[in-house]
Image 1 (cartoon, helix red, strand yellow):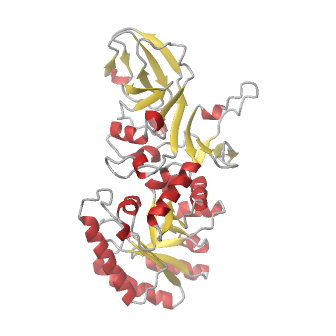
Image 2 (cartoon, rainbow, N blue to C red; image 1 turned 30 degrees about the horizontal axis):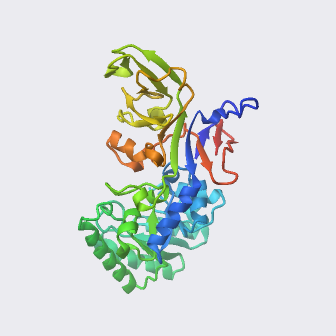
Length: 410
């Protein structure tokens, strides 16, 4: 993931680092803790750490390394391009990419030893890439057991398996895995997970009858890893859980033994006393009930904060305040109340979300304010917000200028 270069480095006299006027702080020890927690829940199945979408906004390469250190055996991404970036960073662990288009670079995937998810139409293209690279492809056949997205239909499954085995007999590929994806595992009371599990077992039986001997069979996501041991098979794919967030309504991260890994922080950029009736932000939908002090928080929807999340919490000096008025592109406002000193909080740290320790705000709080899910809150934090990694040697604050575009990589 690339981030804009800063205009200045640390000031030698003040000790301030101007790159981090705002930052998403990623605790890699929390990532390691969560992987170990999920590995214990999944045992004896192995763990695939899903690091797609730049590790849900947390930074794919540092998170992948931390997850592998903590016991993950596999990595998973959506796109081949994401897999190739991990390979370019020197990560050689087993790695699966499963979402493709007709323009996907199957040749590069085969050449880099990236496992390729195959729902049917991709098979001939993967085989062509294997011939071109003079190297057998590693594929995981995907069956749609009820989610209705990619994956072979049950009606076409027997044909797909048969064709894959013909190519395997020719030495052009190896069927490494069989997999599917669950639709409602985050709602454990629903019966559809049982139906999908039964369909998956049926698909496995068809593959076994055709001579497939997969290295891994995988179905479970984070919620199924935590609540449905009968779905674990050989491998579980965990995404949200490794970032310390709960997939269940009504059950917190702490209750699941998970630690949120991302904290979003900035500084109060202005405080000012205002009179009763002062309007705030575009549309003037909020007005102060009396004389008060307004605090300006310099992040907005360009930084990935949902525009609709008025009321989202911001903690300043040990107290949490709701955002008032509309969230703008670069900023938002909190009402500090009549007793707050205008000058006293200027430059104070403002935390939008973090671990939730001591009652602090969380990504779940922002999800509720925005009417969305915690996945979206962390994933959408934009590249304008530098990522700062802690508890990992050589990953803290190390921007490297890119060849083009004046960007930096952390």
